[in-house]
Amino acid sequence: MITIAISDFRAHIQEYLGYISRGEEIVITSRGKEIARIIPPENKIDSARKRLKELAKTAVLKNVTDPISVDWKSST
Image (cartoon, rainbow, N blue to C red; front, side):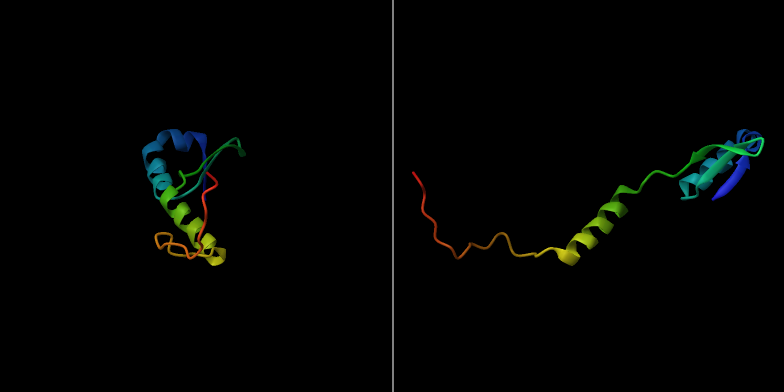
């Protein structure tokens, strides 16, 4: 996390946007007090992969294309 004064952010906005695009979080201050926090966007693909890994730990996965072994009768 990078903490900078608003005047520094204004003067070097392109540089700080580069940091953000590489995953850094920026805290902007004014007179020593935090006034804003800029965080990089969530990488949705990585987040989805992490969620799937967690789900795979508890999920029961089977082949859904094979026919089932249960005979059923239509109610009509």
